Length: 451
Image 1 (tube, one colour):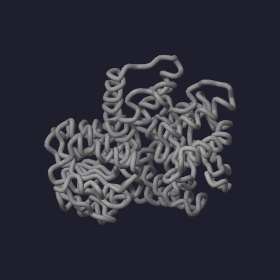
Image 2 (cartoon, helix red, strand yellow):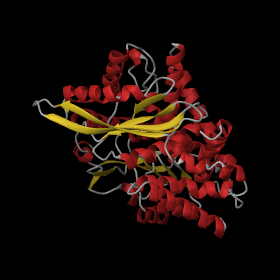
Image 3 (cartoon, one colour):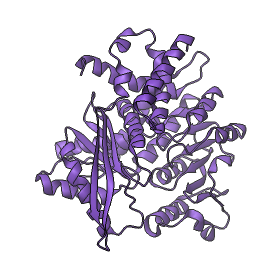
C-alpha cells in the first residue's frame, strides 16, 4: 500500500469511528476489510466515485426494539432486541440471531458487516444481516425462554420474510428458540414460509445444518493444506470452544486423521495429550447440552487430561489453531506464542476471533490463515440450502447436502485464491476473501445505481 493509500485508509476509518462512536468491534471489522479493499480499488475509480465501501459500512437499517416478558416468578423483565440489515444487494438479508448478555449494537453491526462478505463468498444469493438480544437463556426455564422468544418475534416479525430477511440461529439460539419464534411468526401472520432457518427436521429444517459450520471449517483447512501440498492427517490441532462449531470441527478433524488436543469454555480449557476421540467429544457435548456444566469435570472422567482454569489454549504446542469460541479470543501476545511454537495454520471457526494485530503477525510470518468470513461460511451455506428446500417444498438427502457443503467450501477456497496468491507465492487468504467478497457485492451495487 502506498503512502497516499494509507492516508486515505486512515481518513476513511476516522470517518467510520466518528459516525459510530464507541462501537469498537464494528470499527475493528471495517478496518480489517478496508485495509485490503483500498489496495484493490486504488486504480478503479468507479468504486470510489460511487462510494461503495462507505455504503457497505453503513447498514441499510438498524432496528432496535424493547422486548418485555414475564419470568416464572411473575416479574416483568425488559430486554433490548435488534436486527441489523447491512446489505441486500445480492439477496435477502441472511444471518443469525444471538441471545447473549454481551449483545449490543456494535457487536451486531460487526457481525452483519462480516456476514455480507461471507454470504457473498458462498456463491448463494444472500445478503448480510444479524440480530439478537442481551437476553441470556442460561439458567432460564423452557417457559421463560418461550415467553421471551414469543415477545421477541412479536416485534421482529414485521421486519423479516422469506424474500426480505431470513434469520437463523447463533450463540444462545438453537432449534428450541427457533421453534418458539417460528411458532409465534406463524400465529401472527397465518403463513407457513421459510422465514427462519435452523428449524427442526419435522417442520422444514435441513439435515447437516447442525454440523455444517464446524465441518466447513475443517474442509476449508483441508483445502488450504492441499494448496500448500500438505495434508491435515497427523496434524496436532488446538481448538477453543465447546459449542456446536468447536465440537463438530473436532469431530471432522478426527475423522480426517488429525489429533485434537484441546477444547475450552468460559471457565478454562482441557488439554488431553492423548487426543480426543468420538467418545470424549460426545462427553463434552453432553456436559454442555444437558448439565450446562464446566468442561473442568472432564478430568474426573478422563484423568490423563489436565484442566487450566481461566486460561485459553493458545500456549499449547500445536500444528493448527482453530479459535471457535467468540470474538477477540486470540490476542497479539498469544499469536506470538503460537508462531514461536511452530504453528502451521490458523483457521477461524468463530466470527473475528483473532485481533487485527494477531492477524497481521500471522500474515507477516507467512503462516496459513483462514479468515472466518471464508472458513466458517459452511453454516450459512447450508442455511441457504434450507431456504431453497423451503421454497421448493422438497428435502435433500444427507448425502446430497454433505456433497454440496464440501463443494461450496471448495468453491469458497477457489474464490479466495483469485486474489490471494502473492508475488512470493504466499497465499494470503484474508486478502483473497476480503476482495472476492467485496467485488461481487460492489458490482451488484453499481448495477442498481445510487440507492
